[in-house]
Length: 413
Image (cartoon, rainbow, N blue to C red; front, side):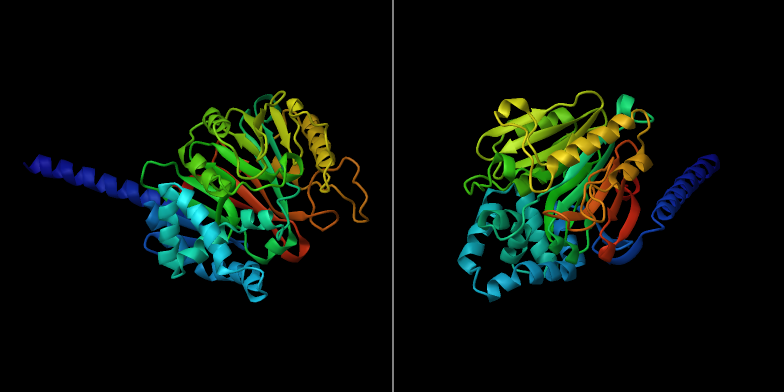
Protein backbone atom coordinates (compact mmCIF):
# COMPACT_ATOMS: atom_id res chain seq x y z
CA UNK A 1 0.00 0.00 0.00
CA UNK A 2 2.85 2.37 0.85
CA UNK A 3 4.44 1.74 -2.56
CA UNK A 4 1.07 2.43 -4.24
CA UNK A 5 0.75 5.76 -2.39
CA UNK A 6 4.26 6.72 -3.39
CA UNK A 7 3.49 5.82 -7.02
CA UNK A 8 0.31 7.90 -7.03
CA UNK A 9 2.18 10.83 -5.47
CA UNK A 10 4.82 10.69 -8.21
CA UNK A 11 2.15 10.55 -10.96
CA UNK A 12 0.21 13.49 -9.49
CA UNK A 13 3.40 15.51 -9.08
CA UNK A 14 4.37 14.79 -12.69
CA UNK A 15 0.95 15.86 -14.01
CA UNK A 16 1.07 19.04 -11.94
CA UNK A 17 4.58 19.96 -13.07
CA UNK A 18 3.74 19.24 -16.72
CA UNK A 19 0.68 21.51 -16.48
CA UNK A 20 2.75 24.29 -14.88
CA UNK A 21 5.36 24.02 -17.64
CA UNK A 22 2.64 24.12 -20.32
CA UNK A 23 1.00 27.16 -18.75
CA UNK A 24 4.37 28.88 -18.45
CA UNK A 25 5.07 28.15 -22.13
CA UNK A 26 1.74 29.66 -23.17
CA UNK A 27 2.35 32.73 -21.01
CA UNK A 28 5.83 33.26 -22.46
CA UNK A 29 4.57 32.90 -26.02
CA UNK A 30 1.81 35.43 -25.37
CA UNK A 31 4.07 37.83 -23.50
CA UNK A 32 3.78 40.50 -26.21
CA UNK A 33 0.00 40.51 -25.91
CA UNK A 34 -1.46 42.96 -23.44
CA UNK A 35 -4.43 41.48 -21.55
CA UNK A 36 -7.05 44.24 -21.43
CA UNK A 37 -10.05 42.47 -19.90
CA UNK A 38 -11.69 39.11 -19.17
CA UNK A 39 -15.27 37.92 -19.12
CA UNK A 40 -16.54 34.40 -18.35
CA UNK A 41 -13.58 32.60 -19.91
CA UNK A 42 -13.15 35.08 -22.75
CA UNK A 43 -10.08 37.31 -22.90
CA UNK A 44 -9.43 40.52 -24.80
CA UNK A 45 -5.82 41.14 -25.76
CA UNK A 46 -4.21 44.11 -27.47
CA UNK A 47 -1.01 44.06 -29.50
CA UNK A 48 0.39 47.14 -31.23
CA UNK A 49 -3.11 48.60 -31.60
CA UNK A 50 -4.71 45.37 -32.86
CA UNK A 51 -7.46 43.83 -30.73
CA UNK A 52 -7.57 40.05 -30.21
CA UNK A 53 -10.69 38.73 -28.46
CA UNK A 54 -10.19 35.04 -27.58
CA UNK A 55 -13.56 33.43 -26.91
CA UNK A 56 -14.51 29.85 -26.04
CA UNK A 57 -17.42 27.56 -25.23
CA UNK A 58 -20.78 27.19 -26.93
CA UNK A 59 -21.73 29.54 -29.76
CA UNK A 60 -23.91 31.57 -27.42
CA UNK A 61 -21.18 31.68 -24.77
CA UNK A 62 -18.62 32.84 -27.33
CA UNK A 63 -21.03 35.50 -28.54
CA UNK A 64 -21.69 36.67 -24.99
CA UNK A 65 -17.96 36.94 -24.28
CA UNK A 66 -17.41 38.87 -27.51
CA UNK A 67 -20.26 41.27 -26.74
CA UNK A 68 -19.04 41.98 -23.21
CA UNK A 69 -15.40 42.39 -24.24
CA UNK A 70 -16.00 44.44 -27.41
CA UNK A 71 -19.10 46.55 -26.70
CA UNK A 72 -17.20 49.83 -26.41
CA UNK A 73 -15.48 49.33 -29.77
CA UNK A 74 -18.74 48.10 -31.30
CA UNK A 75 -20.42 51.31 -30.16
CA UNK A 76 -17.77 53.41 -31.91
CA UNK A 77 -18.37 51.50 -35.15
CA UNK A 78 -22.14 51.81 -34.78
CA UNK A 79 -21.93 55.54 -34.08
CA UNK A 80 -19.74 56.09 -37.14
CA UNK A 81 -21.48 53.85 -39.68
CA UNK A 82 -25.13 53.69 -38.64
CA UNK A 83 -26.07 56.55 -36.34
CA UNK A 84 -25.57 59.29 -38.98
CA UNK A 85 -27.86 57.40 -41.37
CA UNK A 86 -30.56 57.27 -38.70
CA UNK A 87 -30.11 60.91 -37.74
CA UNK A 88 -30.37 62.12 -41.34
CA UNK A 89 -33.46 59.99 -42.00
CA UNK A 90 -31.70 57.87 -44.64
CA UNK A 91 -32.28 54.72 -42.60
CA UNK A 92 -35.45 53.68 -40.79
CA UNK A 93 -36.41 50.86 -38.43
CA UNK A 94 -38.40 49.05 -41.11
CA UNK A 95 -35.30 48.75 -43.29
CA UNK A 96 -33.21 47.62 -40.33
CA UNK A 97 -35.81 44.99 -39.46
CA UNK A 98 -35.74 43.62 -43.00
CA UNK A 99 -31.96 43.09 -42.95
CA UNK A 100 -32.10 41.62 -39.45
CA UNK A 101 -34.86 39.19 -40.42
CA UNK A 102 -32.90 38.16 -43.51
CA UNK A 103 -29.62 37.51 -41.65
CA UNK A 104 -31.08 35.96 -38.52
CA UNK A 105 -33.91 34.09 -40.22
CA UNK A 106 -31.72 32.40 -42.85
CA UNK A 107 -28.70 31.98 -40.59
CA UNK A 108 -27.52 28.64 -39.26
CA UNK A 109 -28.16 27.69 -35.66
CA UNK A 110 -24.52 28.63 -35.04
CA UNK A 111 -25.20 32.12 -36.41
CA UNK A 112 -28.37 32.64 -34.39
CA UNK A 113 -26.79 31.50 -31.15
CA UNK A 114 -23.74 33.71 -31.64
CA UNK A 115 -25.91 36.76 -32.36
CA UNK A 116 -28.03 35.99 -29.27
CA UNK A 117 -24.88 35.79 -27.18
CA UNK A 118 -23.46 39.08 -28.47
CA UNK A 119 -26.75 40.82 -27.62
CA UNK A 120 -26.67 39.34 -24.12
CA UNK A 121 -23.04 40.22 -23.43
CA UNK A 122 -23.18 43.74 -24.85
CA UNK A 123 -26.62 44.65 -23.54
CA UNK A 124 -27.57 45.69 -27.08
CA UNK A 125 -30.81 44.85 -28.84
CA UNK A 126 -30.61 41.91 -31.25
CA UNK A 127 -31.48 44.29 -34.08
CA UNK A 128 -28.48 46.52 -33.38
CA UNK A 129 -26.11 43.54 -33.15
CA UNK A 130 -27.27 41.93 -36.39
CA UNK A 131 -27.52 45.12 -38.42
CA UNK A 132 -23.98 46.24 -37.55
CA UNK A 133 -22.73 42.85 -38.71
CA UNK A 134 -24.74 43.14 -41.95
CA UNK A 135 -23.62 46.69 -42.77
CA UNK A 136 -21.48 45.38 -45.65
CA UNK A 137 -24.24 43.85 -47.75
CA UNK A 138 -26.64 46.63 -46.79
CA UNK A 139 -24.08 49.17 -47.97
CA UNK A 140 -23.48 47.42 -51.29
CA UNK A 141 -27.23 47.03 -51.89
CA UNK A 142 -27.97 50.72 -51.42
CA UNK A 143 -24.66 51.98 -52.75
CA UNK A 144 -24.00 53.72 -49.43
CA UNK A 145 -20.59 52.19 -48.76
CA UNK A 146 -17.56 51.84 -50.96
CA UNK A 147 -17.33 48.20 -51.95
CA UNK A 148 -14.42 45.93 -51.01
CA UNK A 149 -12.67 47.40 -54.03
CA UNK A 150 -9.02 46.53 -54.55
CA UNK A 151 -7.70 43.66 -52.43
CA UNK A 152 -4.66 41.55 -53.38
CA UNK A 153 -3.58 38.11 -52.17
CA UNK A 154 -0.61 35.91 -52.96
CA UNK A 155 0.09 32.31 -51.96
CA UNK A 156 3.28 30.29 -52.40
CA UNK A 157 4.07 26.69 -51.47
CA UNK A 158 5.91 23.62 -52.73
CA UNK A 159 8.70 24.60 -55.14
CA UNK A 160 7.94 28.28 -54.72
CA UNK A 161 8.49 28.43 -50.96
CA UNK A 162 11.75 28.07 -49.09
CA UNK A 163 10.70 24.99 -47.13
CA UNK A 164 7.77 23.70 -49.19
CA UNK A 165 5.21 25.05 -46.71
CA UNK A 166 2.28 27.37 -47.47
CA UNK A 167 2.60 31.14 -47.02
CA UNK A 168 -0.19 33.59 -47.81
CA UNK A 169 -0.09 37.37 -47.97
CA UNK A 170 -3.17 39.57 -48.17
CA UNK A 171 -3.92 43.30 -48.52
CA UNK A 172 -7.40 44.43 -47.51
CA UNK A 173 -7.98 47.52 -49.66
CA UNK A 174 -11.12 49.45 -48.91
CA UNK A 175 -12.55 52.77 -47.79
CA UNK A 176 -10.40 54.90 -45.50
CA UNK A 177 -13.48 55.13 -43.23
CA UNK A 178 -12.54 51.72 -41.80
CA UNK A 179 -9.30 53.11 -40.42
CA UNK A 180 -11.46 54.75 -37.75
CA UNK A 181 -11.77 51.37 -35.99
CA UNK A 182 -9.13 48.94 -34.74
CA UNK A 183 -8.46 45.85 -36.80
CA UNK A 184 -9.80 42.88 -34.84
CA UNK A 185 -8.51 39.29 -34.90
CA UNK A 186 -11.25 37.19 -33.32
CA UNK A 187 -10.11 33.77 -32.08
CA UNK A 188 -12.94 31.26 -31.61
CA UNK A 189 -12.56 28.06 -29.57
CA UNK A 190 -15.93 26.30 -29.87
CA UNK A 191 -16.89 23.22 -27.86
CA UNK A 192 -19.48 21.84 -30.29
CA UNK A 193 -17.01 19.97 -32.51
CA UNK A 194 -16.54 22.87 -34.93
CA UNK A 195 -13.00 23.84 -35.85
CA UNK A 196 -11.21 26.56 -33.95
CA UNK A 197 -10.67 29.57 -36.16
CA UNK A 198 -9.31 33.12 -36.32
CA UNK A 199 -10.98 35.84 -38.40
CA UNK A 200 -9.75 39.33 -39.19
CA UNK A 201 -12.24 42.19 -39.43
CA UNK A 202 -13.62 45.09 -37.41
CA UNK A 203 -15.65 45.53 -34.20
CA UNK A 204 -19.07 43.88 -34.39
CA UNK A 205 -18.47 42.54 -37.92
CA UNK A 206 -18.02 38.79 -37.74
CA UNK A 207 -17.52 37.84 -41.39
CA UNK A 208 -14.48 35.71 -42.25
CA UNK A 209 -12.95 38.50 -44.35
CA UNK A 210 -9.53 36.93 -43.76
CA UNK A 211 -9.51 33.69 -41.80
CA UNK A 212 -7.78 30.40 -40.99
CA UNK A 213 -8.98 27.44 -38.98
CA UNK A 214 -7.01 24.94 -36.90
CA UNK A 215 -6.88 22.49 -39.84
CA UNK A 216 -4.91 25.06 -41.83
CA UNK A 217 -7.79 25.90 -44.14
CA UNK A 218 -7.61 29.53 -45.25
CA UNK A 219 -9.96 32.01 -46.91
CA UNK A 220 -10.01 35.69 -47.77
CA UNK A 221 -12.64 37.79 -49.47
CA UNK A 222 -12.29 40.28 -52.35
CA UNK A 223 -14.87 42.45 -54.01
CA UNK A 224 -16.14 40.97 -57.28
CA UNK A 225 -18.96 43.38 -58.09
CA UNK A 226 -17.12 45.09 -60.95
CA UNK A 227 -16.93 41.71 -62.68
CA UNK A 228 -19.87 39.59 -61.49
CA UNK A 229 -22.52 42.26 -61.08
CA UNK A 230 -23.14 44.76 -58.30
CA UNK A 231 -26.33 43.04 -57.18
CA UNK A 232 -27.30 41.69 -53.77
CA UNK A 233 -29.86 38.87 -53.92
CA UNK A 234 -32.08 39.46 -50.92
CA UNK A 235 -33.73 36.02 -51.20
CA UNK A 236 -30.42 34.26 -50.59
CA UNK A 237 -28.70 33.82 -47.22
CA UNK A 238 -26.05 36.40 -46.42
CA UNK A 239 -22.60 35.32 -47.60
CA UNK A 240 -21.27 37.11 -44.51
CA UNK A 241 -22.74 34.38 -42.30
CA UNK A 242 -22.10 31.46 -44.64
CA UNK A 243 -18.34 32.03 -44.66
CA UNK A 244 -18.13 31.51 -40.91
CA UNK A 245 -20.04 28.23 -41.28
CA UNK A 246 -17.70 27.13 -44.09
CA UNK A 247 -14.60 27.79 -42.01
CA UNK A 248 -16.10 26.12 -38.95
CA UNK A 249 -16.69 22.89 -40.88
CA UNK A 250 -14.05 22.55 -43.64
CA UNK A 251 -10.97 20.42 -43.05
CA UNK A 252 -9.38 20.81 -46.49
CA UNK A 253 -9.22 22.95 -49.61
CA UNK A 254 -11.28 20.34 -51.48
CA UNK A 255 -14.03 20.54 -48.86
CA UNK A 256 -14.11 24.33 -49.12
CA UNK A 257 -14.20 24.18 -52.93
CA UNK A 258 -17.13 21.75 -52.84
CA UNK A 259 -19.09 24.03 -50.52
CA UNK A 260 -18.70 26.95 -52.90
CA UNK A 261 -19.65 24.76 -55.85
CA UNK A 262 -22.91 23.95 -54.09
CA UNK A 263 -24.12 27.50 -53.51
CA UNK A 264 -25.17 30.75 -55.17
CA UNK A 265 -23.63 33.85 -53.63
CA UNK A 266 -25.78 36.70 -52.38
CA UNK A 267 -23.13 39.14 -53.70
CA UNK A 268 -20.39 38.94 -56.34
CA UNK A 269 -17.11 38.09 -54.65
CA UNK A 270 -13.69 36.59 -55.32
CA UNK A 271 -12.01 34.38 -52.72
CA UNK A 272 -8.52 33.10 -52.08
CA UNK A 273 -8.91 29.59 -50.66
CA UNK A 274 -6.12 27.31 -49.47
CA UNK A 275 -4.88 24.64 -47.13
CA UNK A 276 -1.35 23.50 -46.32
CA UNK A 277 -0.94 21.75 -49.69
CA UNK A 278 -2.40 24.04 -52.35
CA UNK A 279 -4.41 27.18 -53.09
CA UNK A 280 -6.97 28.39 -55.61
CA UNK A 281 -9.28 31.29 -56.35
CA UNK A 282 -13.07 31.01 -56.33
CA UNK A 283 -14.69 33.58 -58.62
CA UNK A 284 -18.35 34.09 -57.71
CA UNK A 285 -21.03 36.03 -59.57
CA UNK A 286 -24.38 36.68 -57.93
CA UNK A 287 -25.80 36.59 -61.46
CA UNK A 288 -23.99 33.63 -63.02
CA UNK A 289 -22.67 31.16 -60.46
CA UNK A 290 -19.16 30.25 -59.31
CA UNK A 291 -15.98 29.13 -61.06
CA UNK A 292 -12.72 27.95 -59.56
CA UNK A 293 -9.34 29.16 -60.87
CA UNK A 294 -6.58 26.66 -60.22
CA UNK A 295 -2.92 27.63 -59.90
CA UNK A 296 -0.35 27.14 -62.61
CA UNK A 297 2.47 25.77 -60.50
CA UNK A 298 2.98 26.35 -56.80
CA UNK A 299 1.90 29.99 -56.53
CA UNK A 300 -1.18 32.10 -57.22
CA UNK A 301 -2.17 35.77 -57.18
CA UNK A 302 -5.75 36.88 -56.55
CA UNK A 303 -7.15 40.34 -57.29
CA UNK A 304 -10.57 41.82 -58.18
CA UNK A 305 -10.77 40.71 -61.80
CA UNK A 306 -12.31 37.44 -63.01
CA UNK A 307 -9.47 35.52 -64.67
CA UNK A 308 -11.17 32.20 -65.53
CA UNK A 309 -11.41 32.09 -69.34
CA UNK A 310 -14.90 30.58 -69.65
CA UNK A 311 -16.71 33.56 -68.12
CA UNK A 312 -16.80 34.94 -71.64
CA UNK A 313 -15.27 38.20 -70.42
CA UNK A 314 -12.06 39.76 -71.55
CA UNK A 315 -9.44 40.55 -68.94
CA UNK A 316 -10.83 43.79 -67.50
CA UNK A 317 -9.04 46.46 -65.55
CA UNK A 318 -10.81 48.01 -62.55
CA UNK A 319 -10.73 51.47 -60.98
CA UNK A 320 -8.44 49.98 -58.34
CA UNK A 321 -5.87 48.81 -60.93
CA UNK A 322 -6.49 45.09 -60.45
CA UNK A 323 -4.62 43.92 -63.53
CA UNK A 324 -1.61 46.07 -62.67
CA UNK A 325 -1.55 44.62 -59.15
CA UNK A 326 -1.95 41.12 -60.60
CA UNK A 327 0.93 41.41 -63.07
CA UNK A 328 3.16 43.06 -60.46
CA UNK A 329 2.68 40.30 -57.89
CA UNK A 330 2.93 37.52 -60.48
CA UNK A 331 6.28 38.97 -61.54
CA UNK A 332 7.46 39.29 -57.93
CA UNK A 333 6.50 35.68 -57.22
CA UNK A 334 8.29 34.45 -60.36
CA UNK A 335 11.45 36.22 -59.19
CA UNK A 336 11.10 34.67 -55.75
CA UNK A 337 10.79 30.99 -56.64
CA UNK A 338 12.22 28.85 -53.85
CA UNK A 339 12.75 31.84 -51.54
CA UNK A 340 9.35 32.50 -50.02
CA UNK A 341 8.90 32.21 -46.26
CA UNK A 342 6.94 34.34 -43.78
CA UNK A 343 9.46 37.21 -43.78
CA UNK A 344 9.79 37.18 -47.56
CA UNK A 345 6.01 37.26 -47.92
CA UNK A 346 5.86 40.31 -45.66
CA UNK A 347 8.52 41.97 -47.79
CA UNK A 348 6.54 41.24 -50.97
CA UNK A 349 3.33 42.59 -49.47
CA UNK A 350 5.11 45.82 -48.51
CA UNK A 351 6.03 46.72 -52.11
CA UNK A 352 3.96 49.69 -53.23
CA UNK A 353 2.08 49.94 -56.50
CA UNK A 354 2.52 53.73 -56.79
CA UNK A 355 5.37 56.16 -56.39
CA UNK A 356 4.81 59.23 -54.23
CA UNK A 357 3.86 61.28 -57.32
CA UNK A 358 1.11 58.83 -58.31
CA UNK A 359 3.03 57.15 -61.15
CA UNK A 360 3.30 53.38 -61.21
CA UNK A 361 6.35 52.06 -59.39
CA UNK A 362 8.89 50.17 -61.50
CA UNK A 363 9.02 46.55 -60.33
CA UNK A 364 6.11 47.50 -58.12
CA UNK A 365 3.77 45.51 -55.93
CA UNK A 366 0.24 46.00 -54.68
CA UNK A 367 0.24 47.96 -51.41
CA UNK A 368 -1.47 51.36 -51.18
CA UNK A 369 -0.62 53.21 -47.96
CA UNK A 370 -2.15 56.38 -49.44
CA UNK A 371 -5.34 57.12 -51.35
CA UNK A 372 -3.99 57.34 -54.91
CA UNK A 373 -6.78 55.55 -56.80
CA UNK A 374 -10.14 54.19 -55.59
CA UNK A 375 -9.04 52.91 -52.18
CA UNK A 376 -6.14 52.28 -49.84
CA UNK A 377 -4.75 49.36 -47.85
CA UNK A 378 -6.53 49.41 -44.48
CA UNK A 379 -4.76 46.28 -43.19
CA UNK A 380 -2.36 43.55 -44.29
CA UNK A 381 -1.93 39.97 -43.11
CA UNK A 382 0.59 37.18 -43.68
CA UNK A 383 -0.24 33.61 -42.66
CA UNK A 384 2.24 30.82 -42.01
CA UNK A 385 -0.12 27.88 -42.36
CA UNK A 386 2.19 25.16 -41.02
CA UNK A 387 3.22 27.03 -37.88
CA UNK A 388 -0.24 28.57 -37.40
CA UNK A 389 1.04 32.12 -37.13
CA UNK A 390 -0.31 35.39 -38.50
CA UNK A 391 1.34 38.78 -38.88
CA UNK A 392 -0.83 41.91 -39.12
CA UNK A 393 0.01 45.44 -40.27
CA UNK A 394 -1.66 48.78 -41.00
CA UNK A 395 0.55 50.58 -43.58
CA UNK A 396 -1.26 53.96 -43.65
CA UNK A 397 1.09 56.52 -42.04
CA UNK A 398 -1.54 58.25 -39.88
CA UNK A 399 -2.63 54.91 -38.42
CA UNK A 400 0.62 52.98 -38.83
CA UNK A 401 1.11 49.68 -36.99
CA UNK A 402 4.09 47.60 -38.11
CA UNK A 403 4.02 43.83 -38.67
CA UNK A 404 2.79 42.23 -35.45
CA UNK A 405 3.06 38.49 -34.86
CA UNK A 406 0.19 36.52 -33.33
CA UNK A 407 0.76 32.85 -32.49
CA UNK A 408 -2.58 31.17 -33.17
CA UNK A 409 -1.24 27.79 -32.14
CA UNK A 410 -0.86 29.09 -28.58
CA UNK A 411 -4.15 30.99 -28.52
CA UNK A 412 -6.03 27.88 -29.67
CA UNK A 413 -4.72 25.79 -26.74
